[in-house]
Length: 301
Image 1 (cartoon, helix red, strand yellow):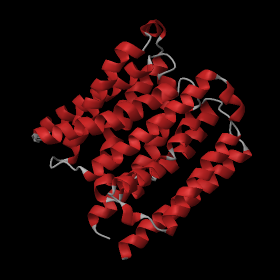
Image 2: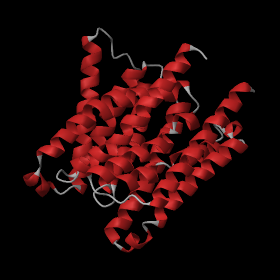
Image 3: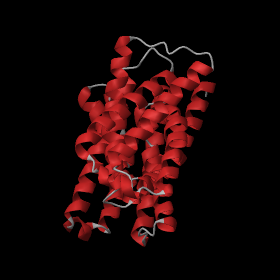
Image 4: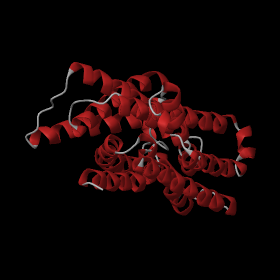
């Protein structure tokens, strides 16, 4: 295993842990701040800070017009329609459930890649078993939440989370197969900024600004945490992992994040955690194992 691959696995580990905490932080943030405004401010500040840090370190923001367009598309799919919509969904559903819905994302990645013809050779029996176990894990979680679907806001939150998951998966496949010639951190800066701008524009039409009268310090601290760790640190790690690992493998963080989100929600937000949830975690971990085995098997061929 070469150094770049080792670094990619380390970067993926950071994403697995830190992004698991972002669901908890987003839940706190959007409790008193309009959801799209909250996410838009977070991403624009993170993107601009990234550009400033790059310039202060002596690097140039060298990127072509074509690659700027590609980062705008990726930023819109992953940052605005993916992350931003999940933030909105968390106004109505528990943070752990939002993370679990997003855990189905590797299924979307494989299906989109297969339909688009970009990753058909990646499918094998281990990958299929892993994805099926991931779906079973999500299904077990829903067994605890069927009654709540009668609440319209809860139902809209669930549908929004599934939509956001699909958009993130589409952005993942697009980024992998429409690579930019610019450096990874430059791509991060442009994706964060462009996605944040789209969110701010959407906020004008979708948010209720009367909430701003009741903003709490907890929401502001959550915003600061998400800017520094959720965006600046981990998003760069995600793009690095995506660049050096297969897209299906780079997306397994979506299986690890729910475990962290569920535990944080249970201990600090009093969200429900049952025996069925524990079984779902075990099943989903099995999915992670088989997906990893699938890509290791492919690498040996």
